[in-house]
Length: 163
Image (cartoon, rainbow, N blue to C red; front, side, top):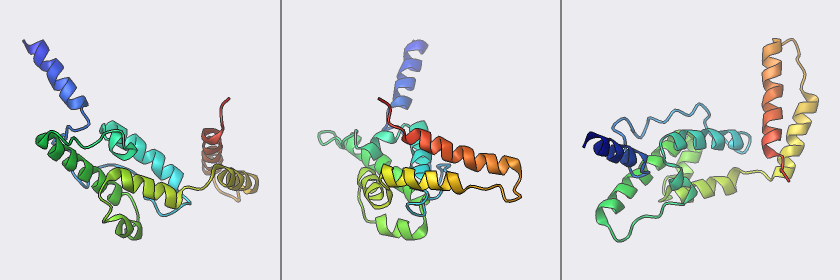
């Protein structure tokens, strides 16, 4: 009996519509605040990691539709969607937050931010290569210099198209 109950609890927790008691609108730890196209890729990656730990990626990716035939699940979906919207709004600059305030779904906000701040891979690669070429230590500690260089390498590597 307890094994069955544990299995049911686990499947409930795995459900994207599940809201843990600790999930609060202001409580999603993302160290990077979106300020514009200069940090969009880093912000997006950090948000995807944070949202995946909460099982809420389907809301921004648009892969979980609002149930139309079940009022209770529809209400759960609305609550989760609004929670994800709050998390997004708390992870962007104030001016960006004001511009997305009236968009009604997390997926629509996600698409809007991508259209607005995503830079094409070609121009982003060019800028990253330029940044890497012009990077100088300038008296900074070697750890700081290496960290900056490694960050550029990692971003370039993530952009590489695999055959």
